[in-house]
Length: 431
Image (cartoon, rainbow, N blue to C red):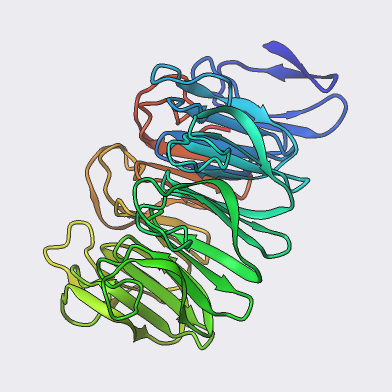
């Protein structure tokens, strides 16, 4: 047995165990997991996990932020950068943290004072720093921030507690909404775009949308597939009203969707894989057209769309992993569904009402947690007692109702926090 001291309380640690529950001499419990000679100690468990292609982060019950993974552009916030500067174990980066947001090469968090801090990639001015130099330490960018967003690695946005919308970064397609577009028109400081905004959406950063507090949907940017729904394929250079009575919205690179307050689902843009559920694969639909009724929630990407109806039934259309052909009408998949999610690399999951996690899709790095790298063609149960899930292109994470963190998948940059760079093929407890 090995003794450790936490907050002046002594604990006994059995270093051969894989998981240990303690009772301290001063009262209270501590739970942590062990892997190899790495011992991540988390008192009270994990509140939130976030993942990007190269970076993973979590917030613990003390509001401390821990991160690991790639650091080529300074996204670990430790003052270093470079392809060889990976961090392969979870390391504390900040305290007093309320939320963490990651993209592939940009890291950000909002603290409990509603201040926004950022670091990492900045070639398009997405750090809002006034230049294009990468930022190697977490640096304050704004105050009074309610929500922050990173779209791709190129565009950043935030919403204030007063519902003001600010934006900066890439403007190749006019996605900054300032009437210009092109390679040399990027916006290097956060600039106010609108007031009375309820939510902001973007895809890879090529187009940006917002819903105002009157439930009107506005958008600008890339429109090659008619996904702006205005009847053309010309890019939109200023924020333009698209629809009214909108409750929620998602944007993919080629197809856009919104849900009305009457629970009707509309789509515009690409249908090359049948993802609009209209019995064919018409390549482009130039105006928003109703696709389903009685819809409670929905999720999709360029090749696929899912929705949950008011009876908690899951329906899907488009290109499903392993299917012999596209599914061109919305088809029932499962019952008693709570949450559905689909991402750009065909990693799809849902949580049912029993809090069981089901997954299917690509598995080239073990991100399905199945113990191998074979693609998974049907939704398969992976975990029980699940509270929150974060799935990135090549890695998957969940927090269970005991506030324990599990992960699997891609690990070339140490983003699994395992102390090495070997891919992880089964869900393994990390904190």
